[in-house]
Length: 247
Image (cartoon, rainbow, N blue to C red; front, side, top):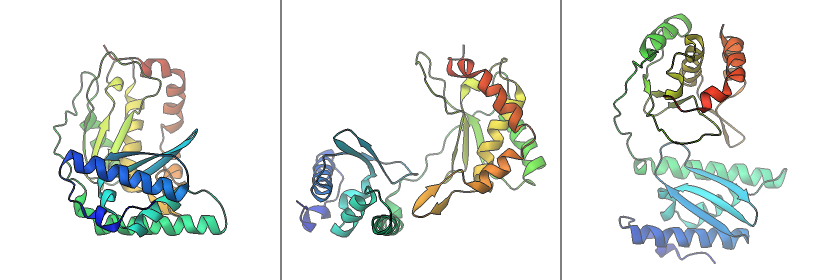
């Protein structure tokens, strides 16, 4: 059953109002899709809507702006999770366009990026020096971003490691602190920094309603980086080191 439009005109300041609106949205999506829906509400600045199918349910992650979305946007959220080709694929692309339009209309609801204190000089590697050299040699000095090491979190076992991240709106690069140790060669750290800088030079594009971050142009330019294959080979040989916690 769809919630009444009036129920979506809440001003979601209180946690109780937000929880109530989240339940209404999950119920609405479940009614349209005739499947169990689990909903997580977030306030990040990048991906506004995502979903994952799990046994017996669909798990949505949506920005809180969608808690006040009108019925046609709720229908678009439901259609966005429907896979298929032909007519179904066309409906999914139309749904993606409607969702994008809603996000643009409510961009003011997206939280402003918090200023972060970054430390580019590590115990072993100086990220600012690497950034400046790469910027001059490969980007003509055109990349404008702050760079620093991410926080050290000890005592956590990892199965994967995200060596770097580029925050587009804040023009911010964070490098995982597991790279800041003598065992990790500078050429590998430089390749990771280059990859994150490349996100600004070759930004994400929309293809058939989907956001493509590492497209053909990105991969072509990344492979042209002189130390790309060398860095990839080193990473393959040293995954256990990268997954371990720095001392």
